[in-house]
Image (cartoon, rainbow, N blue to C red; front, side, top):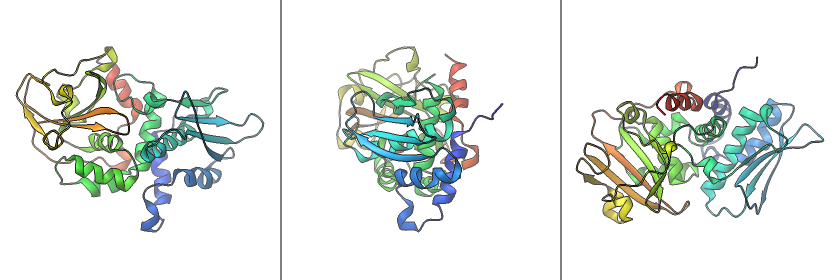
Length: 296
């Protein structure tokens, strides 16, 4: 039986090669170059083409040539935000590195939700492709250097988004994986949560939103519900117990232009700063999936 490939290990394998590039070429990662130049050195069925098309029903796809041992990545040219394009390409590269042996005749076709679902029980392959993309685009060792010792600020994560050429949302989600703070990110629209993701410490303390069970309304007295996108909301407002959780929480809320939804980060009181994970010990996406399954 073939051992299941783990997202962070496959991403780190590529990152070690990319770390040999000159500093001015290292970030942001050129996913097209990685796909076309590195996959032939790893496998006898490489990616040989990366194309953009005006796709209607999905943002990215990984397709196999039925007549030859080769693959192609397609992305939607209607995506306007370059960070979303880069993450889409990395997500499809993740499917290639991790799942191509299990691909059906149509390969993989991924929509926006496939690259934005971080709630309970989402499909393992999509979670793993997301984890691979995040690890490749925002390697743990470099992310650590950018954020270690710094308090949460959207400006800090915006700096990371610029450095890695990703969306602010992707940068925030990567930060959640590393921080030892109790923090929860919520993506919402029209008063309901699309998904929510908790940091490990927040999850262990029981602070999470199980959006898998169905739509969860955003608290009516929160900044997110009021759609208050002011400098005050961006810099954080402390709420009394009973607004978000049964304890005080500092809410940071902005409007995500790249996804046209509300992005909220909640910080709960706790001691300690960053406890960033080593690249070889990041929680695997399927492990997190099983952890969520145990409580749903």
